[in-house]
Picture 1: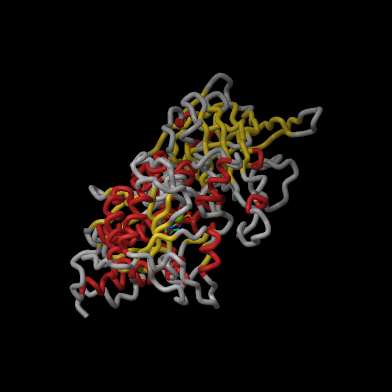
Picture 2: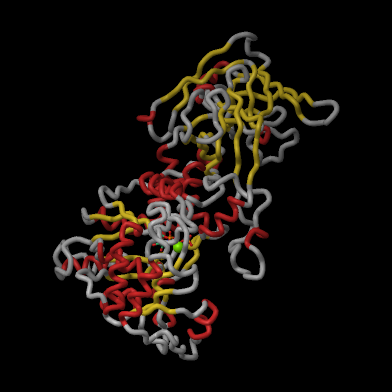
Length: 562
Ligand code: ATP
Ligand code: MG
């Protein structure tokens, strides 16, 4: 095996192996792929799998991947979706160059192909009603019946089809069907409809057409016209492949792309169909297509996922032939892994508890030096203001802590990250509620920077912000949008019944260190010991930041010791 022979490389998925084989055999000089979304909604994480596969193959081979909008159904499609899809593909890091296409650009060609099918006696105009057509179609165990209109003359069919195009017939009254085999064991081959009348304007062709081609017919011919070599789709199209091939063989197209099916991505705790996501949006169950709880690309972006984290996720799950479920934790992990490398560390307190350092001079402050990334000195340092009044996380204090609680409690000493050792000397409570309202500590000035010259150790290091300098902000914590692993499992129960009612928690009294002032929307940081947070692109303002928690830290404690 020479070094360039990838066809038996076991590290390649089965599609890349097929392509390597085709290149080796000289069947193709370069693979040409396409990503063919229907512009009827925003893209989701399932589409990302297909994008990474198709554009990834083109990138690896220095070849092309087309972006083609499958816009054959004018009633469900909108120009706004086209724009969102382009934005998302580019954001993921892919470029279609000059190869941007619309199936609607082929409407004239597709019409000519249909006339050609009629000329070859391979298509006919049928007047059965939708219900009759269902009856005639037969079942898996029973052959279908031929339509009484099946044997019209070629001339009559051409005239009727032209009439359909000219708007002479009512919506639903006539269809053009392929003439294949009503007894085929494959139901897709029982004279499928290839054109229907729809008196609806199209987002690109306006009122030019009142007949629209069906997906199966359009898709294979669009692939052939664009000279796609490998047409990659999900498994549910496996039974459509004979039809895909039939159209191309019957019309003797000069190019005959090969359709290959792979398993779609299924993720736990979510729904992954644009139709269902649309219901969540229009029903007000979420704030929009880009709600950070949604697994749309725009939702993930707003939540703080990076393009690399999504690409890494797609590469990790791989491409296979077998349906499987991927745990949401796998996706979260890929965000964590990427952000761990890139996100600067900062101090943020989600549930502040006031601490007064009684032996620190009033009206004074100083700056301590903090690392932006403990493992990456090249990311530099910043100065944090420190003063007599600070805030710590309420959960970092316990009035009556158990032995294993290594944070603050009466008489206990901890390290304030990058600052000093402090010891809790008294606890102030709110008389009416009994809750701790403030704690008093003393600090050891000799421990400046967080290290004791006498070698004394403390078990805990906690984060803090200076009261006078901290910025107040809002933090949104997200939990899974659905309460069950597979909201679609029971067909009797509407998936919306399974929505998690606690999927959003808004914290309004949070505090962050002043270095975050004017942080640009979309910026990701790690709040030390808390997780990764991203400045919200829709609601954050320079004077009042809003953060989305992207994902928590797996092991918050270990991470803060660096
Ligand atoms: P949806 O049901 O969410 O609307 P779709 O398949 O109808 O999905 P399209 O816009 O037609 O959406 O899909 C564009 C491409 O993305 C297709 O090639 C399709 O196979 C692929 N795709 C869609 N969902 C998934 C998924 N969950 N996993 C992998 N690929 C997917
Ligand atoms: Mg679809």
